[in-house]
Length: 334
Length: 205
Image (tube, rainbow over all chains, first blue to last red; front, side, top):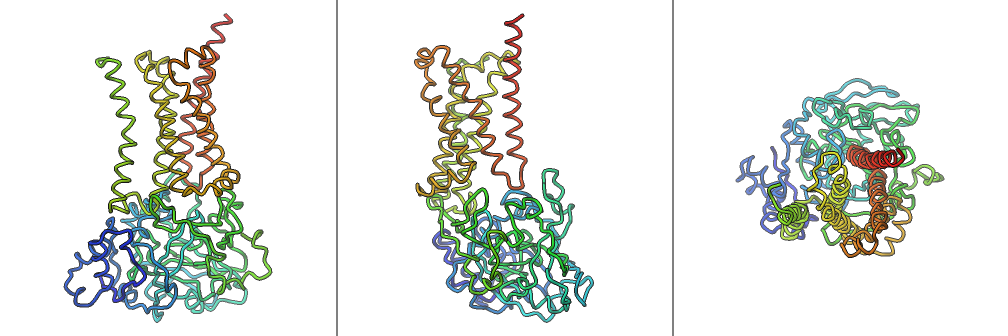
């Protein structure tokens, strides 16, 4: 386990975390080399998230090194990331169960090494690639993004990753590649949600983007968060992050990327087409049929204050992405 | 039964208060530092908890008559009132938790939400229908209303059906719990139909 060298100046968990816990965490996040060196791995793991027992998982050395050496960016300057425990214990990852705490509780046996990703479809470079080969030569960066769930809650997450466009270029997509499809791993032995007879989802989970959306510089492929590798429950070892779309578009634990000429089928759209569109852009003016999207609860909140804030068009990333949808009726293409 | 009626009343009364005691101590702990105890959305967790227990007590209340009839355990009957009152209590806490923790007392928002979100309307109606039953739950009202008291309190059939719809309308992908609650409610209501049919037959023959 490696110690990240950065700290999170925007995290101010003192508001919600007891003093002694947050001082520990800050010490760790700060990662001043002397302090870090003084800590054994076990101590360090215990310190990274004293609240609620979230642990940073162990991953191959090359990946830990790459993540820890990610460069800082100005994305999300001024945003306040959610505490690590919130971001890692409140997840929608139905492969591990349907309640928000299930992914944290049930993903312990999920193995992410070795990991291969298959590249298929309308592109010149195809095949199955080991994650390490896939990421070779790609520099990682940290970006703090707002994540808006379709269920009207949101969190701010410091991701570590790289623009998806960089990866896509390596496979030399053909001009016929109009869409990119992503598929999550299907491994019922390790994923109780995929075994469950109560699930209505047709596994594996699928998502997709239009080519120009996939190539947009905001679209991130993440391999880490909070200066460390991704925990299993957050979509290890590699997941998509599309910050201007509802969270379900940001598919986790990707094993397949397929370039397509036609719009790919996507899981939630297949399940309830009136409720979840292919585009799923964050849009306060188009309500979900059963709840309003005009505002969101920024988490973590507290018992006596729901922390409701107005939802912004494209989750506040309109400047970077609004042009993609020029002339489209976003009520129709929700 | 070994215990006296009063003894049982105390025992059942305390048992029914356990969910309340649990959630109150959880709230105190969250407010005094264990901020993550109920997750990053504690208000929602409390709302779901009280709603679930409201439904549990509705079903328990509804189960009393069939239990007495089918198992001849007559001692259960005098405890139905308390179970019903606890149901109304937890449902009221649920409504209160929604208003305070999820809506943050934004009444303007409430008007919009209730009209636009059918499950809220159904839930609100279910709660409102419980109120006259709470008011008329006393012996005095029972005497005053005579036969109409029973008719009035059959409103519980409507209330539990509305509660099931309220739950079903919120299904996203995990349909198991809402469907399980609905099936239990449907079973308990079907037993009533069977009782009525039997009674009718007995009367006509």
